[in-house]
Amino acid sequence: MKRLNPLLIGLSAIMLGVAPWIINAAPYESTMGLVQKIFYFHFPSAILFLVAALICGVASAIFLFGKKASADGWAIAAAELGLVFGSLTLVTGPLWARKAWGVWWVWDPRLTSSLLLWMIFSAYLLLRKYGGPGSDKLGAGMALFGMANVPFIYVSVNVWRTLHPQTSVVPTLPTDMGIPLWFCFAAFTMLFVALLNLRARLEHQRARVEALYLAEDEA
Amino acid sequence: MRFYRLFLIVLALAAAAPQATLTAMQPPAQSEFVPVEDIPPGEQIPAFTMVGAAYGFVWVVLLGYVWSIARRLQKVESEITVLESRSK
Image (cartoon, rainbow over all chains, first blue to last red; front, side):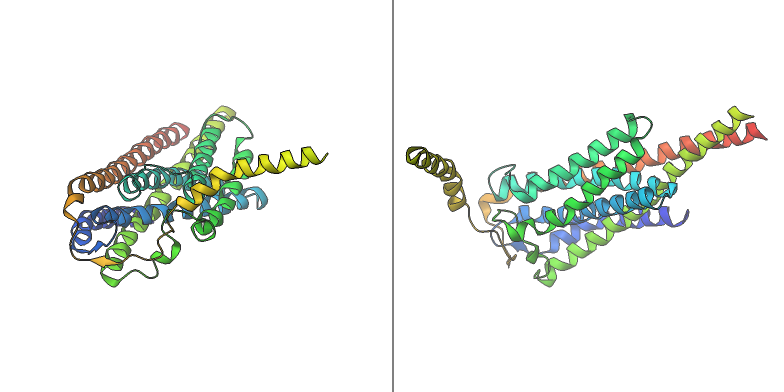
């Protein structure tokens, strides 16, 4: 695993370096033109934002109900990645919207619920950093609420009337738009997996440091 | 009693009216992307700024985050080495 992470990071860096040329070769969208090309980075960020919320929720449930301490490290790692990929989604989205819709932001269900999830991750990480004793269980409960938000975010564009493109866009994508999208998605996913591994390792090593200090105090 | 009922109905309609107008003004959500070969000329420069800003932001954040994790991990692992050598 230790060797796999640099390999994944290196491969995704090369792919993200090549991506602008592949994206440039893709056709323009008929109504949005050039600005639609933000989609090739926005979509992978948004999906991984939701994946991070699912991982954080599942790991927190294992920590809370299965009493597995190591799961908490995975939950913190996923929450931090959720915040990073959520920030990418919430910044690239308005840059796209300003050109495509004429406004930076609309308070529609998809955008509002995504912002809410980002705020849950922020609150979770602040709680874990400054919450003191007991914040691990409180944070785990909060992560379950974050996970519950995921299906709502995903279906919101199909259930409510919104300016945001629907979920049917990706399955109906023409091949010359689909190739750059899945290429970028693969690069983002590899980077996500490597960063999740590294961030979880950091948390587990921190737990080891605490255990070593405790052992030193007892000795 | 009837007056209050009428008042409540008028109040509810008044509250719903702006929302109904907004919903009616909103164009329907896009259900598919249609590819074309050429970009409309008037759109090119501002859109390029947005695309450049979006891609630049993604690159900076991801590189910064990789660097931050590597730095934190290095710090913790050197601390472990010190603690382990002290306990021996």
